[in-house]
Length: 74
Image (cartoon, helix red, strand yellow):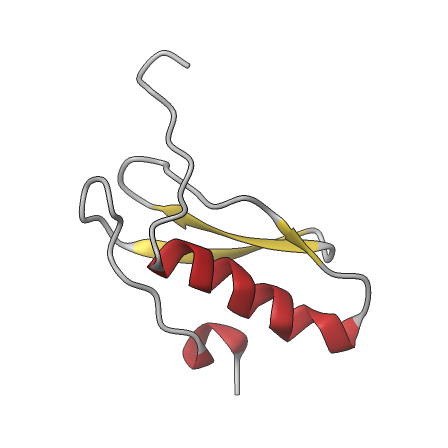
């Protein structure tokens, strides 16, 4: 089963937009709002064993509202 299907993401805490779990070049995961661009910090992993755990941690941060937001023009 794909990681994206196993992890549930809530709507963006700022705008209510849809969230997307993203993997960055095989070294970290983060969650980003597809509407306003808010996102979590990047959660690094070192190997395939840590990959799913990092995705879960990024999703958890998103779901509890630990999200970074840039103001317009930043």
